[in-house]
Image 1 (cartoon, rainbow, N blue to C red):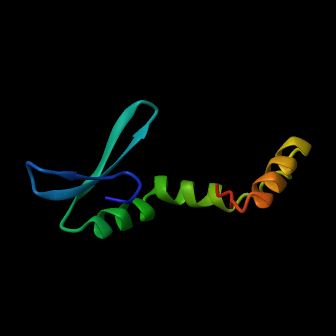
Image 2 (cartoon, rainbow, N blue to C red; image 1 turned 135 degrees about the vertical axis):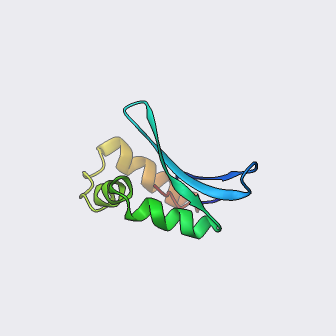
Amino acid sequence: TGYKNVTFNRSKNKFQAEVQDGGKRIFLGCFDTAKGAATAYARSEYGRADAAKLLQPRPAPTAAGAEAIRQAEREGLTLTT
């Protein structure tokens, strides 16, 4: 589907949002569109927790990591996270 924690349920012909929490599957609901299921996930406590992680500052790269970035740039590559 292209969205985190969203799958298509063929038997129901709907998109569903679900997460794993401590090894337990938490069902968030069925939706007509993948975007609707993704929105439900994003608005859930699980989606908000993921968003909060993205806002945390990243540590500076180590010397080896910085060298790898420079080497990739010399080769015309762009590293993504």
